Amino acid sequence: MELETIIGLEVHAQMNTKTKMFCACDNDAWGKAPNTTVCPVCMGHPGTLPVPNKAVIEKAVRSSKALKCTVNRHSHFDRKNYFYPDLPAGYQISQYKFPLASHGSVKFSITDPKTNLSEPSECRIHRLHIENDAGKLTHTAGSSLCDYNRAGTPLMEIVTEPDLRSAKAASAFVEELRRILINAGSSEADMFKGMMRFDASISLRPKGDTKLYPRVEIKNLNSFKSLEKALNYQERVLTKLWQEGKAPTGEVTVGWIDDEERTQMLRDKESAADYRYFPEPDIPPLELSDAFIASVTSAMEKLPSEMKEEYTAAGLTQAEATMLVDSEGLRTRFDTVKIVLGDAKRASSIVLTQMPGFLTKHSKALDDAPSAEALRELAEAMKSGKISTNAGKDVLEKMVSTGKSAATIIKDEGMGQVADDATLTKIITEALAANPKAVQNYKEGKTAAIGAIVGAVMKQTKGQADAAKVNALLLKLIV
Ligand code: ZN
Ligand code: MN
Image (cartoon, rainbow, N blue to C red; front, side, top):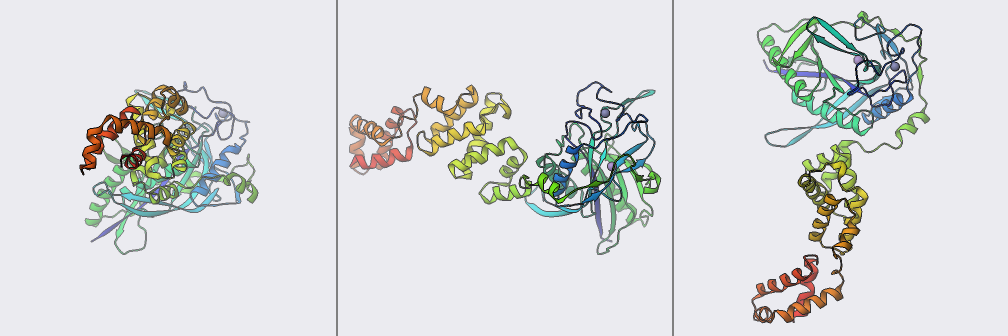
């Protein structure tokens, strides 16, 4: 029997607001001592009242738009009740029947690592809602430690439709989703800090069948790699069960054990009824006006996939385009240089090849690299012919190593003096006079002899003359 794999995901992404979701506590708990960014609100003390953070709503609306979702004009918060030591209030404030946004889609591409060919794909988004995070438990021998710094951190929960057909597709999708959230400015989506977590549902069905069969939900995956591994593992388990005629008859929840690369049964899947959802009585419903939505989404950048298409259409490779999409720092520099030079390939050579090479050579990070403005000055000097492409490379290296501006380096090094025709004509005339033998050879038909004269000119100009210009002038002067 030929089987088809059906995968859907629930993604939790931590939002990068300054303060938490319902209180004024610092939302950046990274590296802070346990239980130092907490207050009675996020600790769920009786009598405290949550106040929604406007920035959370704004950023979630931007993300919803980037995911092509419809932002619902009316939504509200619900209490999701469950008891667990990391949840001080005994309930999570989430959104149930009326989420912030629904019905979106994400275009992404699945790249075959062997052939490096990418295949376009799309996954629909069922909904996006906002909710607060729980604290963090650390289990040690004989005890469990609670850190509530993360309690109250805003999360976006993004639920897909069951549109993904392989583990590879699932990981390609979440990589694109990560790009979109970073680009929308709503999450740092730092995987190392656990800022994106995945629950993956997987089921199989006979190929051609259109109904969905009971799924296995794999909880709490926190890297692209574990997501892909866990899904591949579970796909193998399910395939075997189907082949033995023992396909699952009910939904189950499993956990992924990273060290052992296998899943482990946790429990039968809980149903919504178990959570006793009811509307959050302490927060009024969210009524978003068209004007509000327009104001927070008006200045949005292009989607990462749209940027990538533009870059490849301009002549860049997939890899170069991806580098730019994934790094705002490289992108702003590249875009600036490209506008000046009007040439994507040349801009790519400067920003994506030469500059990173010099940064590595001088042990510097992108943060220390010449700014977009500094590179604009360099590109303008090259474009105007003040310095040659070759000299530009030397100037760039000095910009990286010294932090000085292109103009300062060009002036200090006495560069940029050789662009004007008069100066070059003088140098070339002198070189002709100093190399009579080469001139004679050239006139006798040995065209290669001209190389000696070009070399002399380049030496005289310390390599700063534009080679094409030297050649053109030389051919005029030699006759
Ligand atoms: Zn707080
Ligand atoms: Mn959730």
